[in-house]
Length: 265
Ligand SMILES: [Zn+2]
Ligand SMILES: [Zn+2]
Image (cartoon, rainbow, N blue to C red; front, top):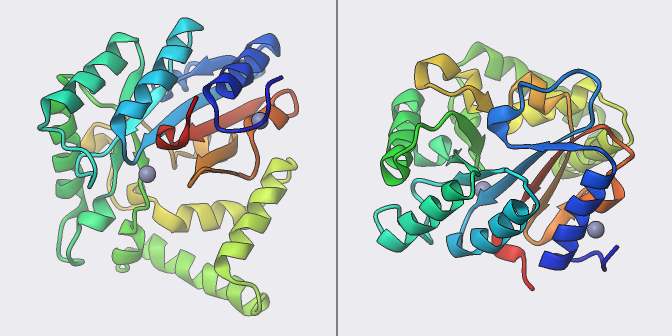
C-alpha cells in the first residue's frame, strides 16, 4: 500500500485494495441495482473547482474498469459551462463511461424564500444537460443552504426543533463538533438517529422539492444512500473521518467522495 496521501498512486492503491476485497464499485446511476449482501462502494467526485483535474482521476478509474459519478456545478465561480474547454472535459468524462451528475446549490442561488427552489434546481439541471447533451438523473448538494431558507416547510421546522434540543442538552459543544462526533460513531458502525437528523437538516433540498418533479432518480440524501452507507469524504484536502484505505474491509458499504482539485501526482 502506498503512502496515505492525496496522490494518484494512493488513489489507485485504494481502488486496488477495494477490488481485491471484493467490492463492487458503482456510480450513483447503478447504486439501486445492488443485492443485499454484497460489498459495495458508491464512488463520487464533487467538482467544486478546477474541472480539468477530474481527468487524471477519471483515467485511473477507467484504466481499472471502474465507473464513478462526477458531480458538476452549473454556476461554479471557477469554470463556465459555456466554455468549450469545459464542455470538452465533460465529454471526455462521459466518453470514459463515467456518470455526470448535478452538483446543485439551489439554496445558494435563491435570493429569498419567495424564490421557487424547484424552478431554480431545474434551471441548474437543464443548463448542465445542455452542456453535456445527456440526461441527468443523479444529484448531490454543494454546500446548499436551501433547507435553512425554506423555513416554512413543516419537516424543516421539526428538525430545527430537534437541533435546538441537542444544542440545549449539550450546550458547550458547537454544532460542528456534534456533527463530527456523530460521524465518528457512524464509522464505528453505530448509526444514530441524531446523526441522520443532523445530516438531513444540513442541506437536503429534496425535503422540499420532489425528485419525480425534477427528474432525479438518485440523490445523496436518499435514505438508501444516506443511511445505508458509511461515508467518507475528502474535502478541503482532508479526509473526514479518514482515508478509505482504512475503511475497506471493515465496512461492506462505503460511499467515497473526493474533490479532484486537491489531488496530485
Ligand atoms: Zn489512505
Ligand atoms: Zn461541492
